[in-house]
Length: 113
Length: 109
Image (cartoon, rainbow over all chains, first blue to last red; front, side):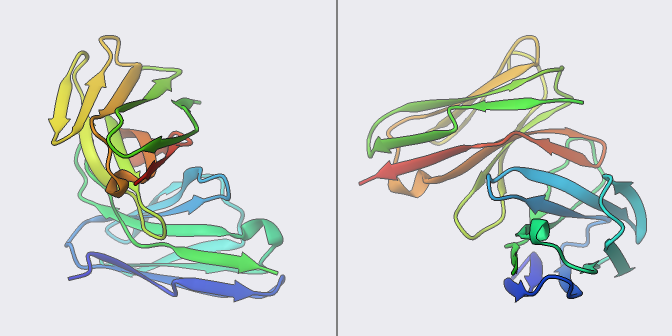
């Protein structure tokens, strides 16, 4: 059983295009996240949603817009893609507890040409 | 802004060797988590440590948390090729994880 799933696994697109990445978790968690991992493997939080409400926005450009239709889903839409957006994007989920474990999806490798 | 430094950045060893990787923070950890990320996968939690001086063991992995709660080490005994991956330390506070840059470990058979 997949706990946190993301689609697509790979995404190759041209500069200027708009694309979306979908994420679903079947763990019953209240909180979901998007992280970006750059080419040097540095992993940085972008957004966090709790019960469909945005609670963390780490100064991410407005071109990135997360949407949470329900607690189990958190999608990421990116407008006007730029070369610098190329990275691996990870979705994660957790329960809201102190030092709670986060469960990560397999990642979406985005390549902007 | 908290900075987490991990060392070494890259480690390549033979199967059966022991190794230690380190994580140092510019400020006191709220709680420290160690994750392992295998190629093409997302990070998976190995351990959470909260109390200064705490030592936790997970099979061949030993995690130590410094008394001042600003540093940690991960020691692997008799490394195996299956230990290959990116080892990440992270500070967990509230709903947020702040990660170090990681140590890439390669264990050759």
